[in-house]
Length: 322
Ligand code: SF4
Ligand code: MG
Image (cartoon, rainbow, N blue to C red):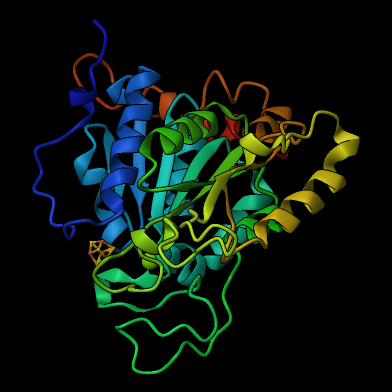
């Protein structure tokens, strides 16, 4: 029987602030899973710590609310233990690009076939709005006593340089576009990263919904308000590496696009490259039976729940230095 959108929801109380962009991202994830009819037992959502860390509680799949900045190691471990899972990792910009920055870069080197979504609101919302790594230099949100003294991280450029093989950006209030991006990220063979712009109406009074919609971004010629965001796909931009030799050109093109901010903010797919082997493929090249017999599929008990685990054999089978 077909799964309905409601099947992906839980009845867990949600205490995100009214108007929080997190709601749009949650809806988009649920819609993507439902559109793709991913069985509930085959989807797994991992989160770090922060407002966004609560996301797995609201999605009726398996999920683990992990540690601050550590969502990627957990999620990669699950995918490598059971490659049949659809693994999504979620977290805030503070979680993923502050304390988790080392894991972010290391993950790009591995290219595990999964999706990582950053809820990017430029503040640490859960702890009262401190400046997070994506807050621009000199910005003073209402929760800061002085303007931000640090320069900001560009998540798209960092992901590109680290080696992520699918990189896109969505906006939490454009739920349908974001849903389509999440579906494409799930379909991608390799590590996909989505930077999702997410207004935090409680602590970030600069990058608000009205700011993104261009309330103060007036066309001098006709006096009309212009939305800041535009879709790369509407401009003929093509971020796909069709042949391996195109890689450097496409990376450079995506970095240039990632630096657009302020009056014009691009959304969509910046870069996609399926010519890089996934980590699962790299393991399978050394351990031929890995995909048929990964760690999570080892029999560990008989019909009477009596342990039959043979750890020596399991470890021997998975040895990469044989
Ligand atoms: Fe959302 Fe900000 Fe409230 Fe957190 S503090 S729930 S990010 S509005
Ligand atoms: Mg944040």
